[in-house]
Length: 102
Image 1 (cartoon, helix red, strand yellow):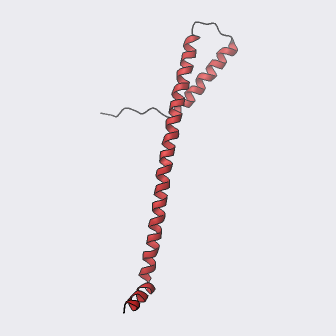
Image 2 (cartoon, rainbow, N blue to C red):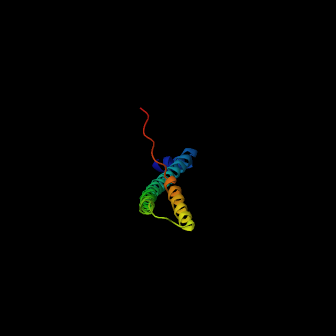
Image 3 (cartoon, rainbow, N blue to C red):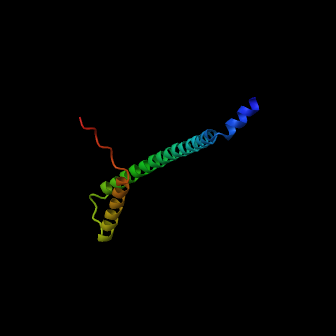
């Protein structure tokens, strides 16, 4: 009798649906794991870029301050301006968080 029940159950369309659902559940679990891993990797890269951006902006500001009372050639002025613009572009890649509205 058990064989008949198992064989009948195996040929039931519900068994195939359940089997497919289990496959989809496993696939969804793998996808979610991949998404979570990706989110962690992206956060690590974001943290590294944020740190690099802060360091570059600080170095450019220090350079500008050191050269503030120095007469520069036009080429040096242009190079400093280009460096400052690049630092701003890097800083803008990770916008500053806006304070919450009270």
